[in-house]
Image 1: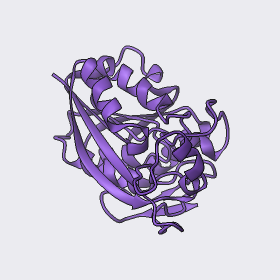
Image 2: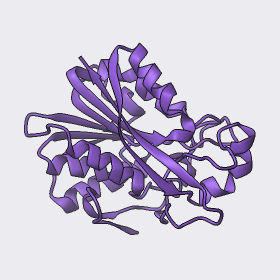
Image 3: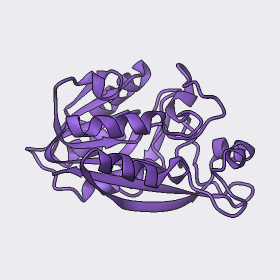
Length: 248
């Protein structure tokens, strides 16, 4: 399918193969944060969990040298096709997060990882849910990225990661701070629940992640590209946050 991401800071129309995460609100929020960094021809950017390659294409258009990584072959193919269509040179690798680039470091690391809390503690190995399910607390991938950040960032380098408040904004800030990085929330946005979060209200409340009048979450919980901001059926809103962590 073709996702129209012309709104905001996203890189225009992109191909998304079935099962590949289509750019949504979280993608645009992270792209906006990326655009506030000092990026140019001498900037090396790593996009972890690239999906469609939307952020990688955006970084390349800002002038950066870009490496994009995803564990799913369809995502790797999609990102390569979108880079080709955008006439941007991007190195796209298949691999498991930073393990795909051992011993390498970057000026900017951007990531929009899976972060939706799931009733299952097992991460899906196939299918669209692989793009959003992240264990019962939503932190299976987020924590790994936090732990890898000090080694994959150069001195002065910056990690930009978007995720849901449902999986713990303060937890991420604390984990990165303990790793020696200077942390802050670079941006926030409230959007309506998408179909996956709406289907998990009972689970989220049982886990203590969602109150009757408070929510936070993942704009990108529908990898087929349906609008996460469709208004829902109960007015539930989720908060997205962009975490910025700098290696000093």
